[in-house]
Image (cartoon, rainbow, N blue to C red; front, side):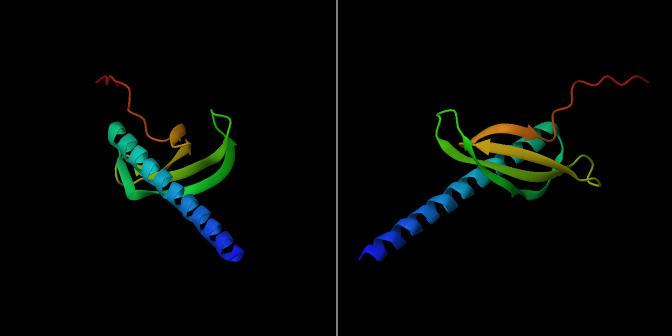
Length: 108
């Protein structure tokens, strides 16, 4: 009876970890797609890839996971650049990738 309880607790923790990881990946995917759209670049592969996971203390003081994701984008379809997102507690804390170009004045 005791071993069944342990198995159920471990299964519950594994499900919680998997579910939180999927939610973070979906959030990172939306952020990457929106950043590419706002910058006017092509979002390649329509996905993000988990690149790192570490324990980090959040603003509340509790330990939680900080998840790093990478994605790829292109300016003209023939080049590839790598962007990176870092999420902590479901919030974006770092971003490296395409940005909206400032108003550029072209002189002829």
